[in-house]
Image 1 (cartoon, rainbow, N blue to C red):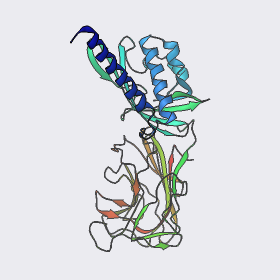
Image 2: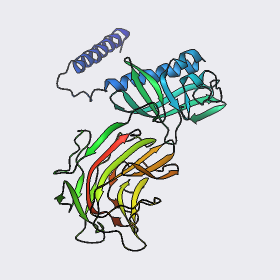
Image 3: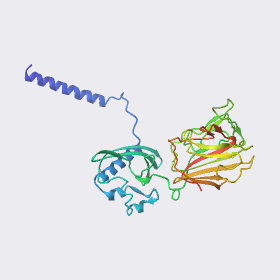
Image 4: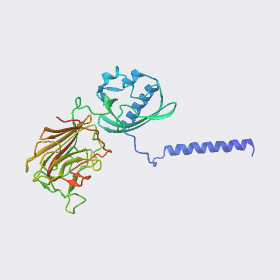
Length: 338
């Protein structure tokens, strides 16, 4: 085959490739993948800017990425300029940062991001981005159409509580905020404006009951409040308890228990029988508070271990016990209610 023939064949191949490519691009029968949400694009761009400032050692640019209402472990944005124990994002600014993985979950102007930052100095390492939390999560807030670092926890002193789920349970299992699917109700007839449960454990008696929310995706494990109303006809048997409600199906990261003497666990005030009472739990900055009828009953400091188990029920599946009585008006908030 001479040189001219080879050239003609090569040109023919190139033209074939070109026209096939054009045909594919204009093919209206092809299926495009789902479009990327605009918030995902904006947040990816935000972290690209962050990465650029880190690699350029641009501290001024980094501080501009913080919200004026930034809060982390007791410090706000004004502290960051003077308290260098925090450093810049708790990571070494002298390192070379080359990759970041961001998994945002957006709710209005707030975004919860699971993030992983990689850097290279002497070898390759992985370090979590500050605001650092036990879950490797941080919050972003959108201010004037610009995303900013918000912190890794919800500061109850500066932020009002936000209702994220409300199940009245007066005649149906629906969340009237529209944020979540209905509760799962098992053998709980509607009664006196709420649901009645006979106290029989779901996995131990054929005539059993339970009421359980679905997975609540926006629940903030660092600052939340849960309230509900309940009425009981009798106290639990000797040396036992019944749950009013429990946070978490498997992990049980918070619970309010009614004890044999009619008090909430750790409290002193007795719940009267056949009367409505309000049970409230709040959790913020590792402090849990339980209230009975809006009066503080117990306070305890601990760190929640939750395993992302974001639901609430009237059954303690670890102890095999279920609430007995009438239950209604379950509300779940991010932040601390007054």
